[in-house]
Image (cartoon, rainbow, N blue to C red):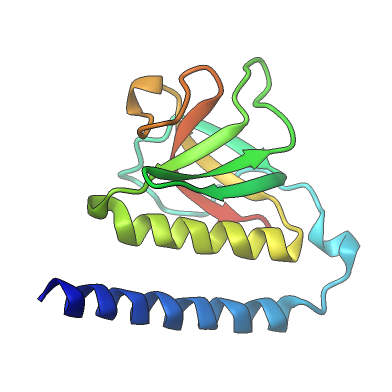
Length: 145
């Protein structure tokens, strides 16, 4: 029974990844200047239940996948802090959200666009393996236009 569920999840992830690749190809014709424009936090998104209390525009340095989490490392730190990593839990309870975050991170990296990351400033919310001095939990994010 677990094998069927695992196989079904893999198929869904593959389909979602294929769709993202098609979007990346379609958007690949934008000029480099269009891709690296700075953007402010999106104010037109309706996220009333978001507990996020921090925002950072992240130019991606690298993306990593670990057993307990995924993270994105930004090329700069959040002003006034040492935070440059943003992470999401890799446990089974957060599997779908983590896969979506990873797809969004990879897409932004492939397009050369920054991520707008809304995060939880309290280190007590960090996923396992996310350091309290330089990492925070992702609440939600988007690719900056």
